Amino acid sequence: MKNIDNLSKIASQVRRDIIRMVNAAASGHPGGSLSSTDVLTTLFFKVMNHNPSGWKADGVGYDMFFLSAGHLSPVYYSVLARSGYFGKEELASFRKFGSRLQGHPSVEWSVPGVHISTGSLGQGLSVATGAALAKKLNNDKNFVYALIGDGESQEGQIWEAAMFAAHKKVDNLIVITDYNGQQIDGPVGEVMNLGDLRAKWEAFGWECIEADGHNFEQISEAFAKAKSSAGNGKPKMLLMKTVMGKGVDFMSGTHHWHGKAPNADQTVKALAQLEETLGDF
Image (cartoon, rainbow, N blue to C red; front, side):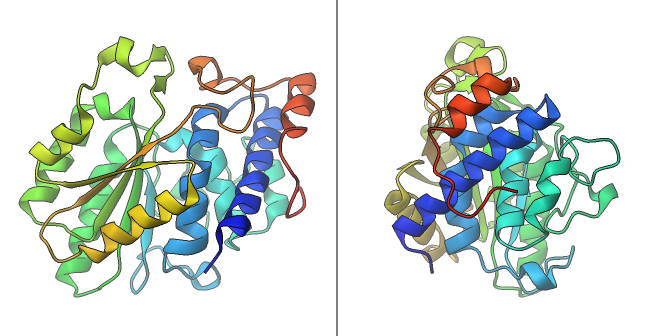
């Protein structure tokens, strides 16, 4: 169990990893990776029942995680490496030719911790729903987690999966929305307004919990509440209010860093704002 101070230190290192990975590759998606860092740090280092050294693709006997918003691979690879799925040195190969750490997670490359290839938005939630239903049918008491984006929530497949999960009472499924209000073309509210997202999920039959996605206590409490209500017949949606580019002042709150790599000078400025706590790769 990690305390708040430890989680904050891990998150700072994960943010450093994200900046350095995307800069070295001269491509990638730092904005959403930075906004979801605190949530995924809490999940992987405090909440999830997982076994990095004994990981199996079928996930039997452990919690499973699916990154539906596959373009956020930098944060995914960092938390996997930092929690022991593979060596942190491999992060330096991000998006390089022949690397296992492709721009979107791929099972073709057999990356420990990656259950499915993701990146075609909307599909990850469907697979996570199926995995959670399989656990219930097999009497596996563990949970399935998934991360989706608020821009991704404009995809029709998200809502097909939402209907199916509620209909099948998949109450061991805990989904997180990285609710940062930005997508590649601009603010989500201007591209396609989602309206009252909580009311939508509740209307689809989900239990919905809102929290500050940068407050480790609130994040932890939201996960605890979601887990405690397993058995009530409702899948769980955690709406985590976040800031795109969190942790780096010139990236914060704007869609311009959704899929843009910082140059050398910008990388130096970004890293100066983030404490090195676990050693860079």
